[in-house]
Figure 1 (spheres, rainbow, N blue to C red):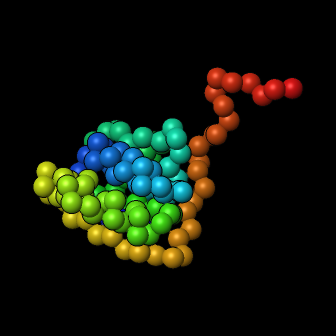
Figure 2: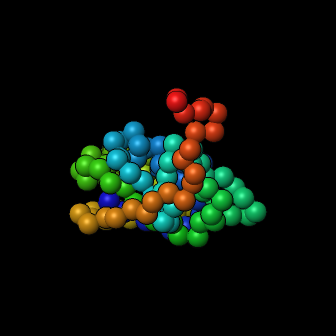
Length: 119
């Protein structure tokens, strides 16, 4: 599934969409070719929204792999996140179902930061 968001939005809206897709059972998520990991978070950088140090454009594309019907129905359910965002921000949301998504690998170092491997 590909969710395209065009218009004014903020880092909170991006995080909410990512968390909603995770909660709906997405197996993998990418935002504008940035693979989302457990440590990824959208923040307001120098006047733009950034994820993992990479700036997002004025239109973002969120790709999610998982049950197409489950992901879309979670986003579009009555009183759901898309309904709330459409009422609170002036952005347009478009969902496209795809069966051939290939998400990028993460650029983050996934080595544990606090733990050490067992020898």
